[in-house]
Length: 190
Image (tube, rainbow, N blue to C red; front, side, top):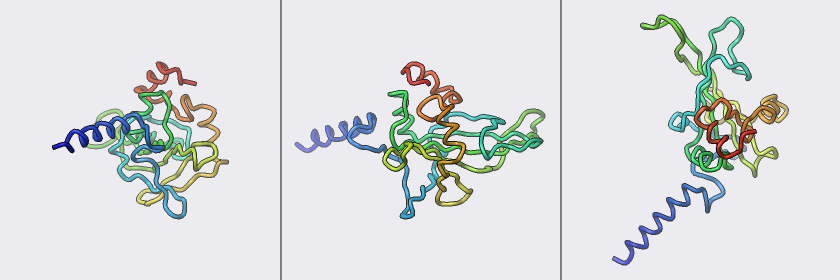
């Protein structure tokens, strides 16, 4: 009988620590690496928080070529990182964002106008890992079906582009309408 209040208090404390991120340098679901220091691709990323989708945005290597239908960019973030951002307006250490690039289609079924999403063209991962990467953030390219994502060299354009144009903490929050107001409210918008 005496154990029940103690266990209940421990459960409440654990839940509070999880919500605040206190007591742990990394939140649940942070980046995992294999013994070759390669990022293990988070296969469950579609269960994460959906931040936004762009159509025909042209700023990366997976952009559609001229004359092709525009691609969709879908951005997902790990739920604990999302909660951390809502609290502070900044991304906590161990944040992972996945951008899923899909082809767009306009002819199919009953569709008469507009575009809908087709097959995955590629996925990329942005990771904040302050202990592992000198610039705190790193970018990874993922090939469909692979268990790991490959680190992009720091000379890659994505590093300088995100550093220069990222609205909050190296990320393009300016394209995530649900987080843009949070960044403005918290005063973290660049």
